[in-house]
Structures are given as structure tokens and as C-alpha cells.
Amino acid sequence: MKFRKFGSDDWQASALGFGAMRLPSHDNRPFSGDVDERESIRMIRHAIDEGVNYVDTAYPYHDGKSEVVVGEALQDGYRHKVRLATKSPVWAIKETADFDKYLNEQLGRLHTDHIDYYLLHGLGRSRWENIVSKFDLLKPAEAAQRDGRIGAIGFSFHGPQEEFPPIIDAYDHWALCQIQYNYMDIENQAGTKGLKYAAAKGVPVVVMEPLMGGRLARPPAPVKAIFDRFGSDRTPADWALHWVWNQPEVAMLLSGMSSMEQVKENLRAADQSGIGILSTEELALFDEVRQAFKELVPIPCTRCGYCCPCPQGVDIPGCLGLYNDGYVYNDPGASRFMYSRFIPESAHANACTQCRECEEKCPQKILISEWMPKVHKVLGEGQDCEGQPLRPR
Image (cartoon, rainbow, N blue to C red; front, side, top):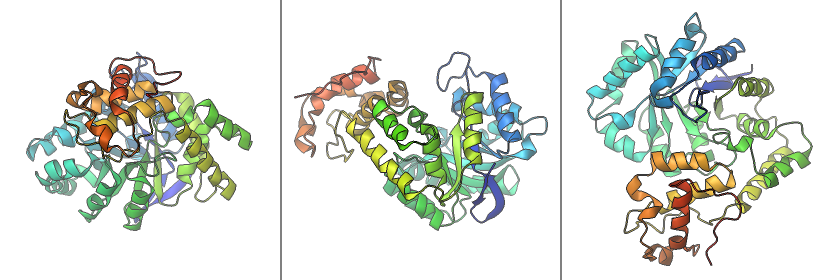
């Protein structure tokens, strides 16, 4: 295992961290609460035996079962071998006292008396202003730090790029931040700018979704052909992981692993990881790959937001973006999950009345009203989106 500097901490973090959001399940459904506990424990312990020293989970993962399984995996002497991270369900907090309520519940689930890194989960401007600041949640967090239930305080981020620096700057004692980052997300969410901003402020950055939920491990044929033509024995997953590890601002890469095979593959990749190991030619390869992905996008939406607000409340950029992702990465299931979980039903594409007000504002001249029924059939009703997508005139 290779290890990396973790901000100003004298602790050396394993290049690979174990993310417990995609544990194997008996029913083979992603994020299922029917977790295969025995296999999950075997995977987590094998990773730790091979040098992984950071395990990440969260209150809602696997319908609450992830923390329970992680807690079991860290019994029998494994707890002291790792730093454990979990996350406060910020969205569920209705009053300041809820912070301790959830923290104490999580300590019980995890069978531990302390959590090394306790993160405020999924922050963006709205959650920061309307929950964290409103209920002054950093005060109970610091109190828990003083009494030993929390080792250090951090946050994970899911918001637009411009909302990231203000959260970094709002608190002087962040122990880490966790961002979604991969070679296709350089401008999405915190992006490369956010990565560099946090690192420059001395905040260690833990990267999640380095494979975009596994989609970059299974690229479509035109993209895989580019990797194959380069002539390396690296798999597409290896390429994606090494692109993240190559960057000095990355303190750790988290991978959500669903099988022992994936654990072993990622461990092998981590053993070969390093900062600045990719050549100029290899870095140029990713520019070609990004362009190939972009050419597969069926709807030319840039998520500029000029179409908003919709008179009916439809989240137009969100709906179009999820459709594009499901089509380009041949993973409509992930897009359906995001559609049902993160876009309110009132903002779904089927709320569109074809008033066409948005089309008058769209710089790309997208016939949004003609896309909306197709988008909802695929994301809301489960229609197959393989093959030639609907292309309005």
C-alpha cells in the first residue's frame, strides 16, 4: 500500500480508502438494505489487512445497514487499525438537539465510543445556511469533539462549484472535505478548482466517486477503443484511478467496492499509485476520452440554467442531465435512482405542460418540451434508453 500526506496531520493515509456505500447485497440491487454482511466483512477486513487504514460510511447508506456492517467488520481488533469516518444526516436535523441524537445512534450502530472523522453530509449553500448555520451545528460538533465522541470535523460536498469556497472559508478547523471528483467531473460540483482551493487552504481532500459510480470502469465502445489503442495493460478503471492519484492535492481516493474482485483490483492499482506518475502523453489521452464521451451526449444541455425557473417547477437541467448520464454511460439505473431520490416528484419531467417558455430562453435551442416525455419514460417509468435516442426535429 502507498501512503499519502494528510494535510498538516502527521498521520499517513492509505492511498485507497474503503467506501461502504456499495456493499454486496443478497438481492443484487445497488444501495440495497439487504446487505450480504458476511461477504462485506470479509472484503473490509481483507482491505485493512492489505494496508487500507480509512473506512468511510454514512447514516443513510444501505438503508442504515452500512454503519451496522462496518461496525461488525471493525470488531476483533480491526477498529484500532483504521480511522473511521461517518456522516451526520444534516437534512434530517430539525433542531440543534438532533445532532447529538443522530451521533449517539451512530456510535451504537458502529459499536464504538468515538468516530475519528465526523462529516456534515452533502453540503451545499442551502444546507449550510438553512440547517448548519441556522441550528449552529458546529457548536455541538465541537462539544462532541471535546468529550471524545468525535476526533475531528469535516464535510462532504454536493453542490455547484461556486458554493464550495464559502463553506471552506466559513470554518477554520475543517479536518477534511470530501468531494466527487474524476476525469469527467473536472468542472462538475467542486471540480478541479475546488480541489486546488481546499488544498491551498490546508484542508485535506478525500475524493469520492473516482469511477463515477463504476461507470468509468465500463466505458462505451468508442471510449474503450481509445484506451485500447494506447496500448497499455491498464484497465479503464485503472486509468481513472491513476488520474486521480496523479494529483498532489488529493489526500485519499475512496472507492465503493461491491465484490472481493473489485477490492483486489483496487489494491493492486493502489500499490502502483503515485503523484505525478502519468506522462504528458498519458494525460493527453484523457482529453481525447473526454471528447469522445461528450460526442455521445444526446441532448446538448450545458446546465447553464437559463431555462429556469420553469412555470411548473420542473428541474429542467437536472432531468436532462440525468438522462444524458444514463445514456452516455449506459447506466440508466443509476440515473433513475438519482431521479427518484434527489429530484422532488413535483420537479419531474412529467410536470412539463409543453408551454415552451424555456425554449425561448435556451441558448442551445433545445426543444425541451419534446424531450420531457421521453426523459420521464426513461427515468420515471423505466423505459429502455439504449439504441438511438429520441432526437426532436
